[in-house]
Image (cartoon, rainbow, N blue to C red; front, side, top):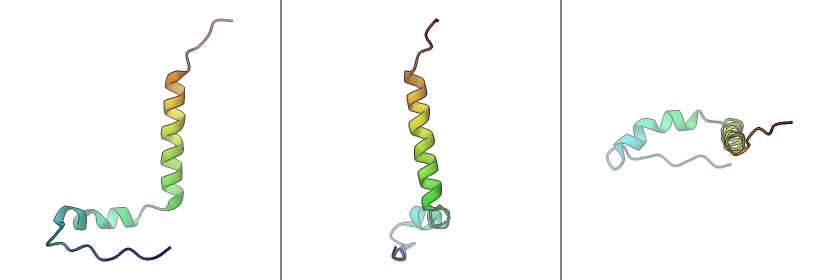
Length: 51
């Protein structure tokens, strides 16, 4: 994976200010977040059934 290019603070001040937080996110973090959102969505669609 290549390094991201430098973000110009003059052109994109908000994005430049947030870039350290984005850099701290690992691929494993991204996968875990997506998996948890997927499972939470599936859980909402499942209705308990009476036995």
